[in-house]
Amino acid sequence: MSIAKNLLEIKSQLPNQVTLVAVSKTKPVADLMEAYNAGQRIFGENKIQEMTEKWEQMPKDIQWHMIGHVQTNKVKFMAEYVSLIHGVDSLKLLQEINKQALKNHRVIDCLLQIYIADEETKFGLDESELVELLSSAEFKALQNIRIVGLMGMATFTDNQSQIKAEFKHLKEIFDNTNKLETLNVKLETLSMGMSGDYKLAIECGSTMVRIGSSIFGNRNYN
Ligand SMILES: *Cc1c(COP(=O)(O)O)cnc(C)c1O
Image (tube, rainbow, N blue to C red):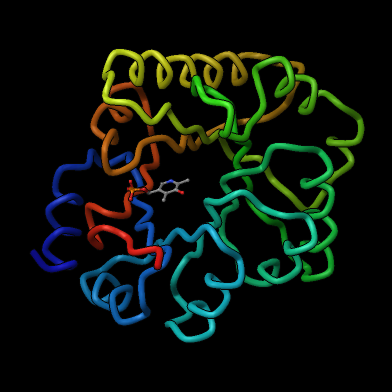
């Protein structure tokens, strides 16, 4: 199957309100261009340097999403062009994004990453940390970032009912946060679901799926 075929096949299955992020990490520009030529304009990368190299080489109407864990000292390399940062999980990182956004005379959209998995290795906030962050005076002072939603990753398991429970938990946190009138945030984007679990994620309320291997094929990390 070709990349274009895979892409169009997946797109035809997505409900209208669900945005597709084509996760192109480790893949060459030629592969991304195949998706681009089939109409894809949103690409997700997990390394800032790799994303920047691709941004430099590719058409400028692409929206670049940073989906990986972000190191504070690297924010400056993407601040000029990044369209959405998915994995934000601390005030310190938000403050740096704000600073770099200000330098570039722009507002950068971010998603806060919520920890929903039953694994030690995944990053993210829990619900009380989320509310604490959004309520803090330090957060409210940040004028050059906008929190537009939440992101989460389910446990890497075949257990569908566990994955479903984790996605439902994230959707519940999303809804609870929007109901808190004191917070004054409007979350619109719920980024959850990858190649293996995006259908389940959509059932549970996802509005943005991050799909890599089902479009571009398996990744080779050598
Ligand atoms: C790699 C990655 C994806 C895509 O994974 P696939 O299983 O290839 O679809 C989605 N989200 C994040 C955060 C990733 O790092």
